[in-house]
Length: 551
Figure 1 (cartoon, one colour):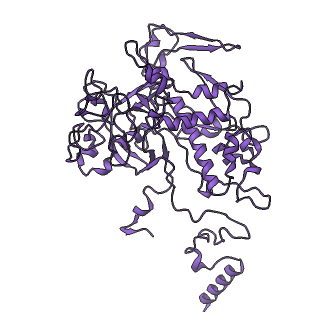
Figure 2: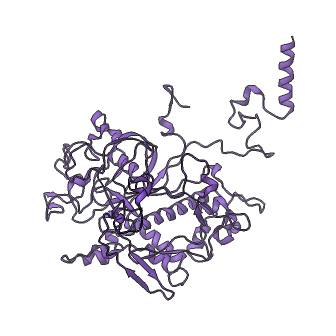
């Protein structure tokens, strides 16, 4: 009898406190399983998006379900590089561009910069010019390529061809711009921004633009402080209403894929059931050991755009041709089993990673990536995050090109310090590009490092070129003529993957890797973007719970 009385009192106390009954506490998505409180109640309290299903596939992207694979190659190393020793790696699910970024896509970026940050304005001159691709990459001392120099980027005949002449830094900045434009339209669609907001920016009606991170951290600063007049239907009774990460509307950033992600996506082992392919035996993004189609339909056709031999960039016209001499229009060849086009041939592609000859799987065999530089938002005197207005920072690259480090309206970022690193075991500094390789402490000569010429031969003592700009804008360049440089590797060289229209079939293998300084561009390197997936590893429709279909 006593036990029964206690049950009744407990039940009454819960109801009297304004909670749902214990029986329903775990079954209702709008009732907290931690406290029993109502979620999203009209009266107030906890507000969460309980209707969230899964991440929306952003424009241009294809879903890539993560898993394990053998990174690197196990075939003979005819180049004797030994820089991609096979290692077992696991990759989290992510999204990747269906095709390379095209001239048309990049021109959208340039047109936006030219409209919002007019180059004739002295404050903004180097924003637009710094984003321009280097069209002179097409020139050859003993070749007539002026047609591409003058037409490849802007002529509509090449609109759907992959953009080239873009260095790694420019590719990263394009991805950042793309993130803001996509999230801007997502917020417009959900009623947090008015449709006219983006057009007022482009037309010059307001000075300032949208930045995703600024919106999340200091929304009142967006559109140069004019966001209140540009809000959509979610604004009620003159009260501002801003989306947060918890709404699930803001997408993760577009970025360059890591080398591991790129290789995993190119290999596309999802379509293979052969065990050897998971052990690194798959030679190309397609099945088989040959570059020609072996299927009944299209038999004999080349499966990618690459250099087939000396003086042979496409084959014999009419009957043994790969359909291109330079680059080809995207989607000219069949996609791999993930639905990704041109993961071999056409153009090689930038990845996010800093190059090193080794892959240190002793440190990480999960989402492997070398290049982490951890930053944080700068805090102003008012205790709020700092937003850049007129103090635009520019950087003069070793080749003399001037680029904007940040754009007006973005957050000011600084390196993490002891406040974030103290007593941590997973990282101890902001810059981790040289971790365990390329740092003085990673060499057996670490106690002998000094400024004398003999010790400059050790480790990654790559050439250093000095470029300076004086107060009137004149640039002086000092070429490194040292005889003691032993390598081209440093923390500013990035990995690029895949073969191109200039490369032999050897480079079509997804495991092959090369590097180039991040400030340089060529006529055979392009890029595509990726995006991390948040939440479940697989799509909802494919999820199972202990053999049962998910509800």
